[in-house]
Length: 434
Ligand code: B12
Ligand SMILES: *[C@@H]1O[C@H](CO)[C@@H](O)[C@H](O)[C@H]1NC(C)=O
Ligand SMILES: *[C@@H]1O[C@H](CO)[C@@H](O)[C@H](O)[C@H]1NC(C)=O
Image 1: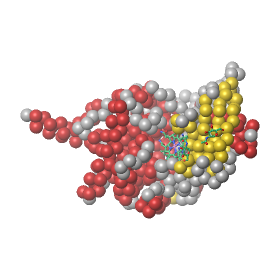
Image 2 (image 1 turned 90 degrees about the horizontal axis):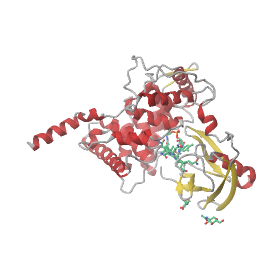
Image 3 (image 1 turned 30 degrees about the vertical axis):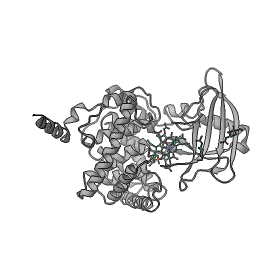
C-alpha cells in the first residue's frame, strides 16, 4: 500500500502534478508593474531588453511603449551587437526579440540586417574558452548563463559546453557564487537538460540543478521566504518555477516567497523587469513559447509620455529638492589597499535629507576635487562607479569599487541608495568573484 502511494506521489511529481500549487500575483500588482515598465521607455534613454522581455512575458504586448521599445532594440542591435556589446547583452537582445515573436537570426533595421544568433555564438565561444583556460569568464557567470539559455531556446549550437562549464562551477565545493548567478545558471541548465541525450551530461546537469534549488529551498525555510537579498528574489523565484521536477518530491512554498516580494516596493525598472516574469509564473525560459497571435491584456495606458519620465529621473538621481531644508551628515571614505599607491581618505559631507549616495559623492568631489574625483558609467541598473581618485575598476583583473555602510556591503547602487544621518559609507577598491 505504502509503496503504491509513494509511486503515485513520485509519478505525480514527475508529470507535473505539483502545478496546481503554482502562485500568481494579484492582477492589480501586475498591471501596476507593467505600467512602471511602460513609463520607463523613452526616446532619450538607451533601450533595455530586459524590460521588453518582461513586458512580453507579462502579457503587455500591445502598448505603444512596447512597440517603441522593440524598434529601439532592433536599431540598437544592428548598430552595436557585433561590436561593443557583451555576450550577455546580446543574449538579452535575443531573448527580448524571441518574446516579441521576432527572428533574432534576421534583425532588420535602419536598412541593415544582422544575425544576432551568430554573434551570440561567437561571443559565447569566447566566454567558454576563457572559462576553460582561466577558470573565469570574460564577463560574468550570470552573462554566460543568459548566453546558454538564449542559444538553447533558439536551438543553435554552442550552449552545451557552456552549460557543462556552468554546472561544474556551481558544484565546486566552497564556491561563493551569488544567489542571483546560481539562479540564472538554473534556467540555462534546465533548458539544456531538455535537449541533451548523453547520460553523463544529463547526470551532471541534474545534480547541479537539484543542488542549487535545494540550497534555495533551505535558505527560504531558514529566512522566512527570503532567498539572497530583495533584488535576488526575481531571478531566484524564476529558477524555482522552472525546476520543480529537480527538487521533487520536495515542495516549494511559493506563497511564502511571493509574500517577501509583495512586501517590497520596487522602483528601478531593471528590478521590476526581473521580478515581474516570476510574479506571473512566466520565467525567462518561456521567452520562446509565448502565444504571439493571442490578444494581450489592455494596458493601463493612461498618461505615460515618451519623454524622460518615471520616478527614476527625479527620485533616484539625487536632484530632488526636499520641501524641508533638513540636512544630514554622511561620513565618506575611499580606501585602496589593493593596487599601486595605497590610499585612505575620509570626508564629512552635508546633504539634504533623502539624497542619494550619488549626491554625497558629488558634494565630496566639489569640496575636495583632487581627492574625491570619480567617474560613473550608465548601466541597466543606473550609474555604476567605475573610477575614484583616478583608480579605475578593471573587469579583466576583476577589480571593482565596492560600497559599504559600516561593514556591510550595500544592496543598491549609488543612484538608488539613500544614506541616513551620521552614516559611514566606504568605497573599497577590491577584487570580486563573479
Ligand atoms: C556580475 C555583477 C556585478 C559585477 C559586474 C562585473 C562585470 N563586469 O560583469 C560587480 C562585482 C562589479 C558588481 C558590482 C556591484 N553590484 Co552587482 N551584480 C552583478 C550580477 C550578479 C550580474 C550582472 C550581469 O552580469 N548582468 C548581465 C548583463 C548582460 O547585463 P548588463 O546590464 O550588461 O550588466 C551590467 C550591470 O549589471 C552592471 N552592474 C552589476 N552590478 C551593478 C550594480 C549597480 C548598482 C549598477 C548601477 C550596475 C551594476 O555590471 C554588468 C556588467 O557590465 C547582478 C545580479 C542581477 N540580478 O542582475 C548584480 C546586481 C546588479 N549588483 C548589485 C549590487 C548592489 C552591486 C554593488 C552596488 C555592490 C556593492 N555593495 O558595491 C556593486 C556596484 C558598485 C559600484 N561600483 O557602483 C545588485 C543591484 C541591486 C540594485 N537595486 O541596484 C544586483 C541585482 C545583485 C543583488 N541582488 O544585490 N556586480
Ligand atoms: C583609514 O584611516 C582611518 C583614520 O584616518 C583609520 O581609522 C582606518 O582604520 C583606516 N583604514 C584602513 C583600512 O587602513
Ligand atoms: C577592502 O578590500 C581589501 C582588498 O580586497 C580587503 O582585503 C578588505 O577586507 C576590504 N575591506 C572591507 C571593509 O571590505
